Length: 282
Image (cartoon, rainbow, N blue to C red):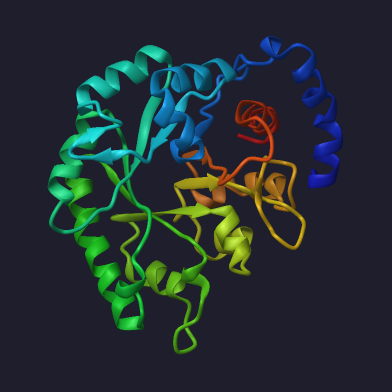
């Protein structure tokens, strides 16, 4: 059985080689869809968007999820321009984190479609909108309405979790309520590995209990210390070999690396992570 410890041992040499001759490993030898959530490099993107995108492609990332949609533009580009620029660089715009509502969903769908995206994801629910179970039921109803609109347009609506979905209200987990109330053919779930573990729950158990409901993943590792910082994939305590062995059960179609902070050069960090991800079951 492939355990996290054995996997780290088997790939340690690869990680070491990367820093001896990084260009030799920057290619994507298995032609995998290895995605990244652009929030990960938000500071670099602000300074040099095009240069940062080029660097991602050089390292080997080839699928992106945006976190910079506003005024009907992605990082300042209209949807068609954004698609052309990204595709020319070898980066496929697959998904967008957007602050979705019943009021803006139609325009968000139109722009995501023109940008060539297949997914729209609701990334966060404001605190004042999620205080009671009734609030969460309304959230689920809204997601179903927006999900039907997305489905009719050929896009899949996703919901991304943090840790607050795993804080019980009247004895019930909001995350379980969403899974129960959201129609499987209208809403998929983008499981964030870090935040689920941070909240005290196990991704593998959810894959078993709700098969096929998790088409998108956020791959984010957690340092094995008291602070539990976000860290490079494979360097923390989350069981990614075990999680990836459950990919078919979960229904996973695409995943996106996300890291909240860096303790080293970001490009070195992202290279460590992609070298680990390349050799997980895909």
